[in-house]
Every structure is written in structure tokens, then in C-alpha cells.
Length: 150
Length: 126
Image (cartoon, rainbow over all chains, first blue to last red; front, side, top):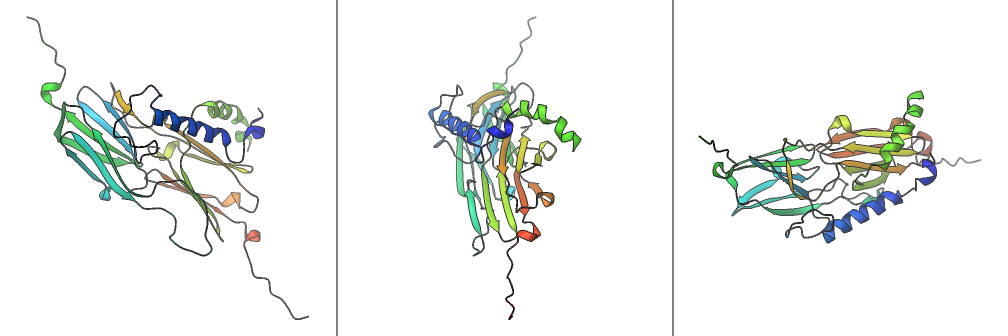
């Protein structure tokens, strides 16, 4: 009801939320297992990994990147994603004032260890709305199987 | 305009939902202010850019196309909603806000009102 009174110019509440989330993420107390290869809380891109019975799904939040410049490779069960993100800001300009520069820029590399049953031969990758989606199929032998009882 | 007043209530409900604060770059040139926000995974349909009086409200929900039966193994970004607000100043022309969205990056251009653009004042000999 008094939303306008509570909305600070700098969105203080939102910033506090973000700080808390980043702390949780850094300390690994959010109840979700964290990775040994997540080197810092604001690693770019953020990565989610999920699994279905047939596949391992990796989502990398990498907005604003030309997918052709992304390098995705799998070596010894490690999936690595690397590339370079160029900043949107014009490089120079006398009449330019920069007020915020929070977005990541520069080269990046993230490495994720895949589950043992992932098959490096059957991988597909797509890029949509700034999310790189990598689907790694599981080995046939590793799929859960139902055994008929005769 | 009537519609926006009716939406006040659901909007307040939404405000209480946890949301990520998207990272932003903001620059100002003589033409106006430009901002870029990272909102990966948001389809264009669910992106909302609204100017309410003196505030620019940006909101969107990501949908990571997930097959059914998904089991989370490792999660760095748990929230799928993004929200960020900016307070505008009156020399910006709220009526001519332009927004474009590509590859998860939202670019918003807020032009300066014509009257507020810097101009050279001629000094006449009296």
C-alpha cells in the first residue's frame, strides 16, 4: 500500500537480497550442493546442472554472447565452457558518463564435472535467450532398466 | 490508464516474490541515458518494461526449457524471476523510451526531453 514510501532510489531492499544470496552462494549454505570448481560467487556464467533418466542437462547463463564464439568441450568427464564477452559500452567518448558497470566483461572459462554415466559422444548444445543449454546423454548401460519377471 | 490502477494490487503481490537483481550497465550521453541488463533465459513475451510516473520497472521470468522428471544436481541460479527498478529524473522523456532485447540482454534507451538537451546559447551584441 505504501509502496512508494518504501521504494528507495537505489532499491536498497533488492541490493540486500542480492548480497544475502551471494553470501549464501559463496558459503554454500543455501542447501544446494556447491561445486569444487565454482571459484567465486560471481563466476560467469552461472551454471545449473540437472539430470533426467536419459540425459544430463547443463544450463549456462551467458547473455549477450555470439554463440559462434563459445567454445564447449568435454575432456575426461569435464565439460568446459569458455569464451569472451565484450562490453556493451562504447570504448571511448568525451561526452560519456558511466554510472554503473556491473555486467561481466572479458574472457571466461567454467568447468563442470559430469556424472560418470555421461556419454561424451552424444552431446548437443543450443543457445537461446542468453542461455547456453548443453544436453549430454547418459550411456545406455547406465539407464535405469526394468526387468521383467517371468 | 485505468488498467494500470487496477493492476496495483497484483503488482504488490508480485513484489514480495523473491527475485534476482539483474546486473546493469548505465551510461549517459548528451542524447540520454542507456542501460543494459542481463536477463538470461527470459523469453521476450514475459519481459515487462514499464514506466510508472517517475519509475522505470523492469521484470521478467526465465523459463529454462526443462524436460519433465528433472532432478537438480547443482544449482548456482535458483531464482528465475528478475526484477529491478530505477527512479527516473524529469529531464528524461518517459514517453519515448525504447527497449530492445537480444540474447538475454535488455537494452533500454531513455532519451532526454528536447528542452533538456544541452544547447549552445547565442550571445547577441546589444
